[in-house]
Amino acid sequence: MRKTLLTAALLLSGVAAAADLKVYPYDGAKFLAGQQFDLRVEAENVTDFKDATVTLDGRAVDGLTRTTTKPTSVEWTLRGLSVPAGTHELKVNFTDASGPKTAVARWYAVPATAGKAKKVILFIGDGLGWNTVNAAQMVAHPFNPANGNPTGKLAMMSDLSSMASVTTSSFDSALADSANTASSIATGQKIMVNALNVYPDNTADTLDNPRVETITEVLRRTTRAGVGIVSSAFGVDATPAAFAAHTRRRGDYQAIADQFFQGSVKPDVLLVGGSRDFIPSTAPGSRRKDSTDWIADSQKLGYTFVSSATELNAANTGKLFGLFNIDNIPSYLDRAQYKGAETLKDFTDMPYLWDQTRKAVETLDKNPDGFFLMVEAGMIDKYEHPLDWQRAVWDVLELDRAVEWAKDYAKKNPDTLVLVTADHAHSLSVYGGYDAAQGPGKREAVGVYEAAGFPTYGDKRDANGLPLPETARTYAVGFAAVPDYCETYLGRRVFLDPTVSNGKTGAEAGYVPNPKICEEGSVQRTGNLPPSSNQGVHTADPLPLFAFGAGAENFFGMMDQTDIFFSIARAMGVDASKK
Image 1 (cartoon, rainbow, N blue to C red):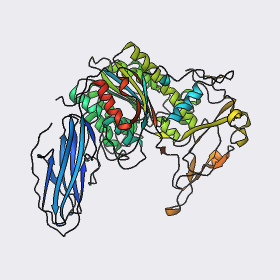
Image 2 (image 1 turned 60 degrees about the horizontal axis):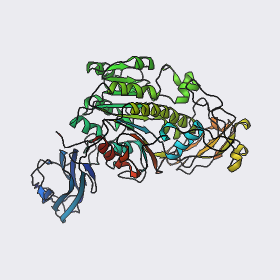
Image 3 (image 1 turned 90 degrees about the horizontal axis):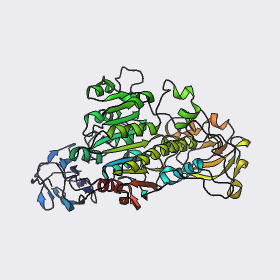
Image 4 (image 1 turned 180 degrees about the vertical axis):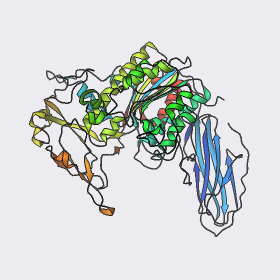
């Protein structure tokens, strides 16, 4: 415990008004014993401030820095606080012209325990709800038409050591986005929508918010274990950023890129898309506002840089940085099957997620002290949003191949824990079969109940052995939360957004179905989202968690997403109180 002593006595003058007290970490927060966080007390609507005391477990808190963000506020901040195991009470007694006021926040710190897992591979499928997993299972392993039994299981669903169903929510909403959900996994805290590993504050600066330590930061501070971050999305996107960055705004792309190399995590392996955030502003396609060149500068820091699958597979180093596209790495279908020049452009040698996973583990395995590796299948969500279920589901199949490799690794390395879960869900659902021979957009081609029959995925396969989406009988798949759009039931080789602008501005601005899709042959669906929505949205549906190997028993039953953080810490025997 950082024992601090201070009585904060503060004087302000002003006109009498009611004060509003806020304390972060919030009441009900749970930590690892020794996990570091920033304490923030904010008093708003202050008039004629008289006095304030801040105590922790009955003792005055020392080291608080007082600020006045605006004339009617007073704030106190203490960075890097931690508490020992047990229950704790932070109490603020505040007095201004309106009289005394008290705020209390009660916290609980979890004691360290011995762990079994020296190595953790955490797979996060962005948008991988239960129904999305099931759709991938039904495509990858079609039912036997002779008896209706499935012909196999996804690797992520097979030979489980344990499993759980996970619920999500945000600090400020029942619904969630990828930033705050990944942050909940990384820190054990409820976080605001669009925020990464920080609590709210009343300043305009998005980078000064009170922070909470992530599992990767705890490992860096208390152990010599390696850290790796892999994603098929652009590298500063929410999920990879949640394991190395802190900001109130997930769109602080340049700052997030800098934190990968200048923050307290500094991953040994970073394999992602999105080079535009790591190259100087003068380079074509750059999104930066300065001359920083992390491709060059990372090599001065000892990283080996790779930009293609060929270079990745040949790399043999202890620190590896890879950028494989200027933006997101395109979907599996675009890379492996469609191969459209308009999509791939100059990036014709991009790795699969299983390549990235294997090389990340090979690199981290050079460290005898173990590792934590986060692997995100980031493009599932990015195609569920525009209602392109085929691209989303085939990215689950790509993820499953990476999981299969990781499970084999864990069998050979029994001190390894493999987890597969998601950050949030989408409203995807398989509700029928579809006779593709009738062409796109035919309601009469949808078969329900016994008329759904058995789709024929797997009659043709690609070079990796995955089924082709084009087959005689497919599934009818839809989304529950949608804008107005045209449903064709079938996929397309060139991606199209489901909506386009209605051309209006102000209060009349909105979106209408993409006419190019409607012209393919379609059923127009009336949306149930606000007219300002141009795509589908996340849902509050529960998520799967599949666990394999050492420490898997820590993941079972119904879990809140924040519990994943504490279960990983238990599985690894993390002692955050170590110096």
